[in-house]
Length: 282
Image (cartoon, rainbow, N blue to C red; front, top):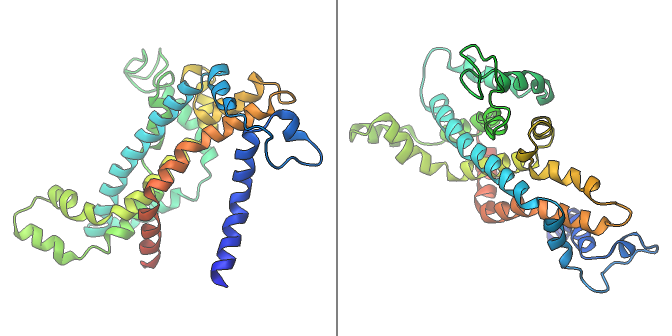
């Protein structure tokens, strides 16, 4: 009975995605037909090729992969370092720092948009700026403006701290007795134990950055060469007439979901393990 309920729930969740994929293989008359046409008469696989031909979809892919991949790698490094320090070392103010990090998770991200924009604009010695951050464009016309504001994740630090707390202190003490430096203990002893948590954080960070829309929209308004997939998909409605080319819009949306789905399928084993283990901690 439990498996039947889970199967029905999974089918319910997957139905919109299946409908989207099938619609991307139809013609527009088949999509808007009443009563609905459930399957395409002849699958229109060339819809996907037309999306690449009509808009710079490949450029959007490259920008999104560069931004999401870079942010994910840097967040894994910063979160694991901070999580290891907060989870395995005792120093004055540790709990206060951790609570301060958690408090930042309660602030709506939209409130950071304007401050982040001016921070990217006023970066000293970047984009023609002087030492005071004046006279140029800072990071605004480069990929750094899409990457730099997201290289530290409060949620990532929280997740890794909880995981590192499960690593036995005796294991780390044994490494110290053997003469390992603190960084080597972190890199070669503690970090390998955190693969499930790292995979979970990588998936959440990559998908979050891949789907990010508002901040890339603000940045790419003055730098269209930095356009990412979500912003590019929004432009599909401008490039195509929805009443005529609805099938191409659906094909573009499907193309936009492919990398995130592939990443999840590759790391799902670690993802499930990471969610299970971190959910059992204090």
